[in-house]
Image (cartoon, rainbow over all chains, first blue to last red; front, side):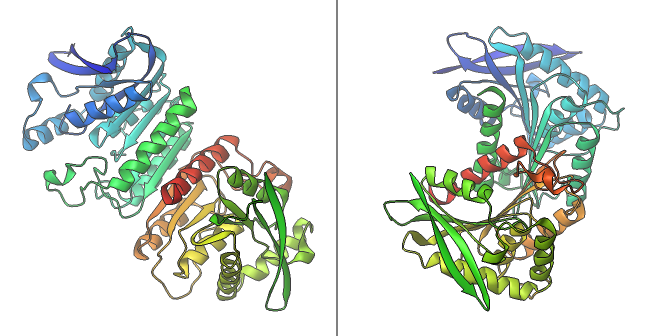
Length: 237
Length: 237
């Protein structure tokens, strides 16, 4: 029912390759831009995209790291993550580039775009909302909450963060700080916190990263996905 | 489709009158015990019960204050609230009494009971979970989080708290404290926090209380209700 289409694109000097997942009829639909974890584009995010297609949306799995890093080993990818994370202004430009790319596709309703990210990608989704750009919503699944240290903008996007309370990368004080930051920025926001849940809870292969506090949690994965679909229905249903 | 039935009962010296809302067929179903706000049993909670009946559950609207206080003025009710809140061990016994009463009804599946409360009633629902008693879940809508100061028990119930971030009675440090308390107690818990939302957000008449930070919020009311129904489906669906 769905088809995947590789979308090559360039950001500054880098060659990236994102993946569009949609129906064959080419009709314009609400679209979720999915921002992967530190491991880049994998079958996990493409699978999430296919689930969205079943529900009447498009998925657009964004490559932030570059085509050459597809399937690269963990340590290489963490090196790339640190590179991207070290310049949040540049990361914001990268995210705006991805947004404009997706927005330009015929199958994408330009005013019905949600950006949803995982781990590092969750931070990227929040950063896009923080830019003040006009998107329907930014969604973080076990994302990093660290503010970008850039001038405050009014956030027009709805923001939802699904968060594992035992996430060692995001202790409670960062949850409170995010709530206060989003309040100041005027965003219509929600944070759903889950007890006894760590980082990476949507990823059945999370424990393969062998990092303390990083683990799949089927119940939290299901609860966050259900709430995410509720949000899409609230926005577009 | 639904019928309401007054349930007179006594707790210690007091005459209470709760309201059972269910279908006329008398079949046993999963049941939600609804614990009202400081204002006691009103048409608001009975209406929530009727919505639950439409979805295949029973509602049981618990009277904690006494039949004589039905429709009493605000100041009287706050006096009663302070009386009940001043002895949390007695409040726990009162909640256990209500639970056993509901559990004894023919229409109630004894092992499929959720207790959901509003404002003060949210605290009562949490207190029942804190007793360690066997219920499927305890749910707080804009409830008070203050711990009861009683010996810790292992919480077997799932706990969900729907919380307005701007609730003046429950600042962020109490949200963090609840998360940490529920984690220590072993509960499978969730806290859903909503930005720009105050206390009493499910109640269309909340502003009539004329208390700063207490106001209806249609979006938060709808989001919390949808998530509540998701929980019931997770438990009984």
